[in-house]
Amino acid sequence: MEPITIKVHPVDALQIKALRAFMVALDIKFEEDTPAAYNPAFIDMIRTGEEDLKAGKGIKMTLDELNALWK
Image 1 (cartoon, rainbow, N blue to C red):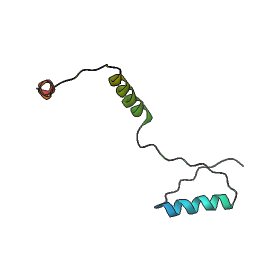
Image 2: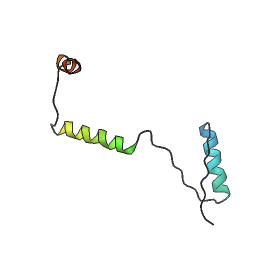
Image 3: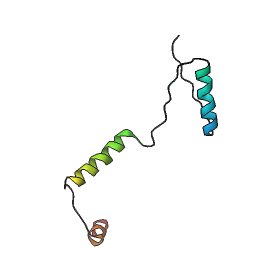
Image 4: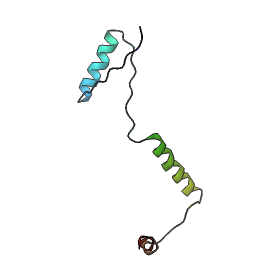
């Protein structure tokens, strides 16, 4: 039989546990997928920036220098 997608919206951990038990009891194969909080491309950009800072790439600015950029 071909797989189908069913979206379920449990409201608490007890419902999640019950859903898992139901699937196991009926010997239904399933996989869980929790959505990522952030876009993976965004996470990669942040990690790259952090690595660049650790490698000494970047500049330090005072608040006055930073404020001068906005004027």
